[in-house]
Image 1 (cartoon, rainbow, N blue to C red):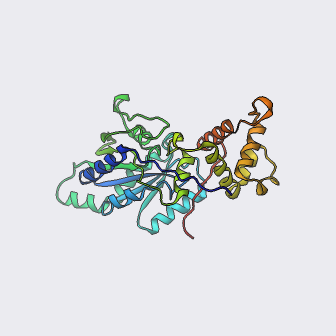
Image 2: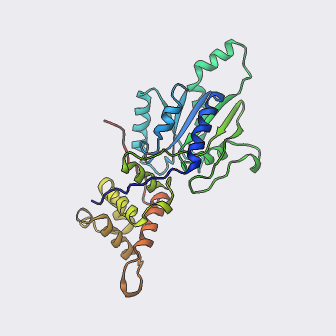
Image 3: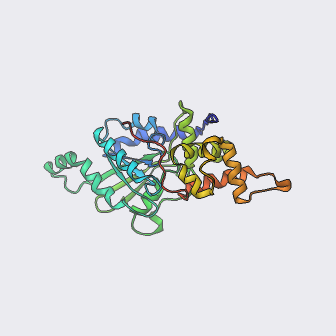
Length: 292
C-alpha cells in the first residue's frame, strides 16, 4: 500500500477565522458543528473542539445521504454516550433539516426554562454554525432561510467560500451566525489530511491527484470492494493483489482514458474517481467508524 500524502494547508484567513469564532462565541447560546458523515473523525476540527468547550453544543452529520446509514446510526449513538446531541441530515436535499431547530430546543431546554422563569419568553435563540470548509454550512443556511435570495448564503462546491461572520433569521425566534470554515494549523495524522482531501475539504490544487485517487482506491478496496468492482467493472479477484496506482490504471483503461500510443491518462482517471466518490456515485460509503 502506498503512503499517505503529507497534506498541509493553512491559509492566513484561517487564523483570522479562529479569532472571529473566539470573539463570537459569547454572542450565541449553542454551537452547531457540521461534520461530514463519511469521515466523522477527520472532519471534526480539534481546534473547534477546544474553542467551543463549555458552550452547549450539537453535531450535525451532513452528507448522510452519501454515508452508510448503519454507520451513521452508530455514530449518533456514540455521541449520545458522550453527552452530545447528534442528528443526521442532507443539507442539499433538505432531508433531516426539519429536525435541526427541535434538536436545538432539546439541547437548550435547561437554559430555555431559566429564561422563561425570568419572564424572557420572547428572547431569540442564537446559534453559531461551525465546521471545516465545504462541509455544508451554507447549504444548511439556505435551507433554513426564508425571504428570498437576499437572505441566503453563497453556496459553491469548493472550500473557503464564506469569509466573514453573517447573521440570519431562521424560523420563528431563532438567529443563526454563519462562520467561515476553518481547518487546523497542521494535520498530525497524514491520514486525516488525506481523507479531507478525498471529500474535497482540501483544495485539489495542493495535492497530487493521482496519488490521492490511488490512495482512495486502496481505502475502498479494503473497506467496500464491491463499490470499486461495481462502478468500474473490475474483477474482484484482481483487487487484493493490486496497488492503488494499478487500480487507477485499470479504471483508466476501462473508461477508455487513453492517449497516443495506448498510454493510460491516469490524471483524467484520478479526477474521475475523486469526482465520482465526492458525488456519491460509488454508493453510500463511510470511511471512519466509532470505537467499539
